[in-house]
Image (cartoon, rainbow, N blue to C red; front, side, top):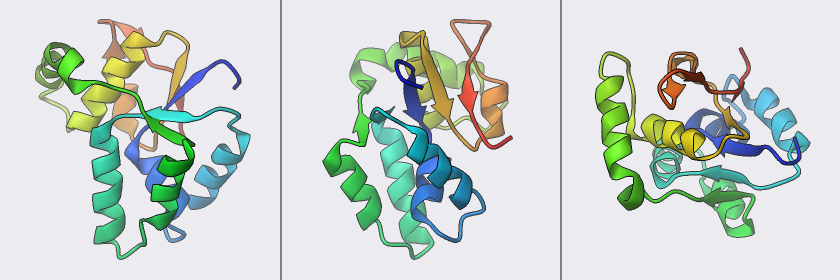
Length: 139
């Protein structure tokens, strides 16, 4: 996977930290295959913290991933707001979240990328109109 930018969605990050998550083993294996940092957006970070805390899981492991730079936030909502809003409108008939729209926009900005997700909605989302988004997913 060297050279491919991995864009991390909420699901695998929660699964990595939470031993009770159905995708925990898959997420651990995937993380062990990465040679470079994962990239995400602040909306994903917010979702991860909320979900872990809601499940009573310590957020410390996730915070350490951020501190070590294993997971980096690398997206400016301010610079990409118009495109993100357009994606939210485009996929209004789907359960699209702000995090999903930001990741789709990140995939538009980085041709050589994969979205690391457990979310099947990314099978529907397209970048730059019709482009399939490469996924790293358990399905």
